[in-house]
Length: 161
Image 1 (spheres, rainbow, N blue to C red):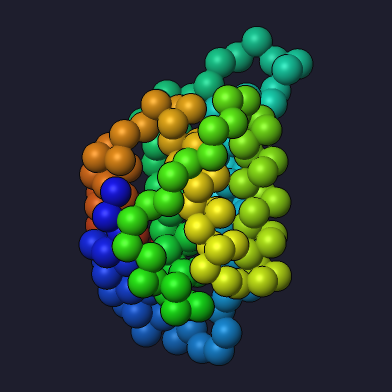
Image 2: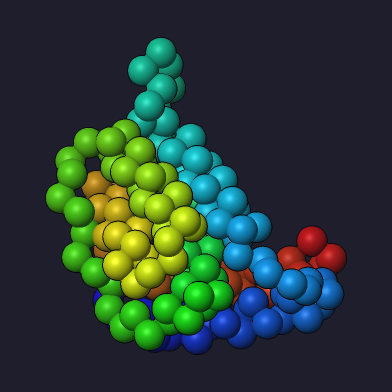
């Protein structure tokens, strides 16, 4: 999947949010923590780790929206570190256990936050690709959901979110 459109849309949204909220200084760590929180929210909606509960996962649409929340911050972090020249979504990891992939994704995020190189950034994307595969999300679905959530984020800003 080509990422150029997503980077462009995210850059515009970031500029809009930062201008309207007088956000100054280095926001990298705040966005990094936001990505970790969004990953946790996604894991919570899938309930993959909740072996003690008989309740199933949230509806697919809810899980997809949580997924693209992460993609917003992943794109934004790449923009912060001038890694938005990444044109294509890297190949996903091939792990089959969702709990394991969540742990690997968290680890890859922490590694990227420590050493923000293209290789550590691509690893995070590969982990998210693996999550998408396991959850059955196509790149087209992700793109459509990203575009919808991007507009929702603008609307929230206009409403004083």
